[in-house]
Image 1 (cartoon, helix red, strand yellow):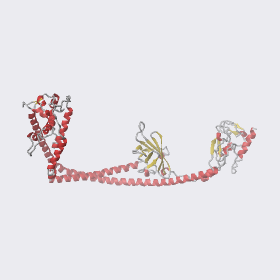
Image 2 (cartoon, helix red, strand yellow; image 1 turned 60 degrees about the vertical axis):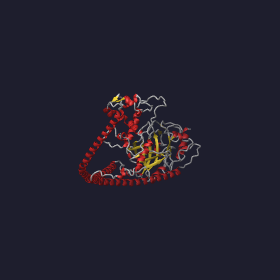
Image 3 (cartoon, one colour; image 1 turned 120 degrees about the vertical axis):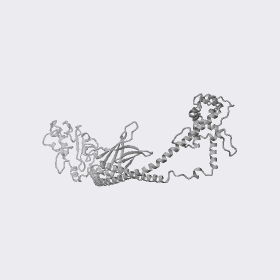
Image 4 (tube, one colour; image 1 turned 90 degrees about the vertical axis):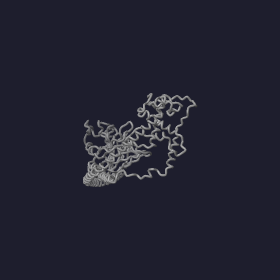
Length: 565
């Protein structure tokens, strides 16, 4: 009975034999293995594990350990079924898919004993597949032709860069010579200028020293006048009692001068001599003293000169700085007010007894001072600066020397700038000449260009040989995903991938990087971006630069293969 079943299955398989080849083989056996299935002799398992009568092949019982005796049934779990798919591509399936009710083979050969209504659609699928393959081949051919143009353009740009480098090197040599000449001319022009200006510097220093001495003398004279005014008993010592008798030093305005307030202005001493008063006491009390003197000066109803105290106590600076000895009265007043505020802040606070009998001590109104200044300006006919023409800074001969030196310096600066610009441009071109633009310079044309891709949240930008960035669609600011690093393709396919590394660091994570996968296409285009791992981005980029020459039209060979039985 078993032999009869096997014979029936074999005859069914024989019915689908290719008429041209007239090769008999059981169902599910590929043409390449037909010689192992000879019905005239016993079948040997393909793994060499044993042999069985040929009638046991495809009898729906697994005899061989490798399942090779059941290529057309689902009896062996490790077996395989071959779909011939005449007119389309052949297919090999696991034996478990035979007669499972699902049409896996386009020629319906895997469902010969099932209830599935499978139809042979291999010719239609084959025709569509061949059309798609032809279309892809045309695109590949177009990409290859564009690659050739990119190669030609790359070599052209390289030669242009070489010529430009030679030209810039000559220009730089000439510019270096000009700069050297201008530098010598500058030195020659600066020597007489330096000698001429030296006398002005000496004169200025002497004038400043003289003015400084005058200011110091005036300052000390003011201090002596104040000391004489405050030393009530004229004993040559300024005591704490004398200070406490002056309402001027009631800095907390409680109606009396406390010992702490008096000691502060005496620099924590019990008494001060004239010399120590000038060096330590007067700088502390000068702002308050001068303010008090101005405040209690009776208003004048005539055009007579102000009282001697006011005139004699014109404020000189308390510190003599050779760099700034010419302080104006306004600047002195501002300095005095600042010093007084600092002194007030550093005073110890006396307890407020809440007495209404304390003497009022109103501070002067700043607005009134401003108004007085405005009135003084209005009274004057024309500001002094406008009345007097600005005097020349140097004599005529010295000014000529300065003008010549300035012109020489300007010419040198221009020549030096020219050398630096040429050096920068030359360095940039030399860097491009050592950069790897592919085996045939095919990628050189990409440098200087950028390509964008936008998804739902971000706009990504790839600038070949420069950087990769990310920018949110609904915001500002750009995140650097990486700087150009190196070609990272596998051996034999080096130029299929680019690595951009050392991007901005992720929060509590690694620095960002971008891995650019390049595939053949008819245009240079960024077609996709993903982030498979945190802070690691994958860019998909198409370019003709990686398109290789397509093989000859395989239609005849394909037709021969696809008609295999």
